[in-house]
Image 1 (cartoon, rainbow, N blue to C red):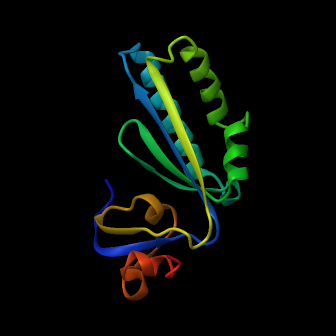
Image 2 (image 1 turned 30 degrees about the vertical axis):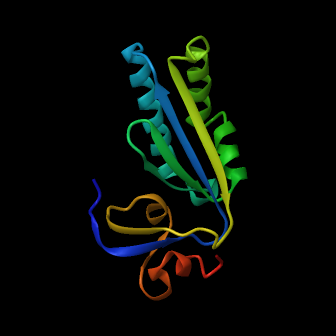
Length: 158
């Protein structure tokens, strides 16, 4: 676990970016090998993304427990290019998952949401937390002065 940051900080990302949420729901017990294999593929994908060059567009991620993940990307085009790249970890894992689950949609479900975020049209604050979310994917700043309040972090746009 990352070290706890004991002061109040705000997070910033230069320019527009994309927030991609993805998760799964497991209704019934499955073959252990399917679940373990899926987790190993996810870990390999995240390892690949963390090591990827900036040109890929991946900014960072935060796990939300065992079944959900938030990813931050520079653009939707870069997220989509990665998701469809046959030579990357995601595509073969996605194809394999769909083949295995084609007759089991009630046992395991997946969901995802994609948000296009315009520069300056978001705010984030963290206090007594390890690096998560935008603070992990972007830059951090002391939440003082104009960054003390949500309205200030939004640049008084609300």
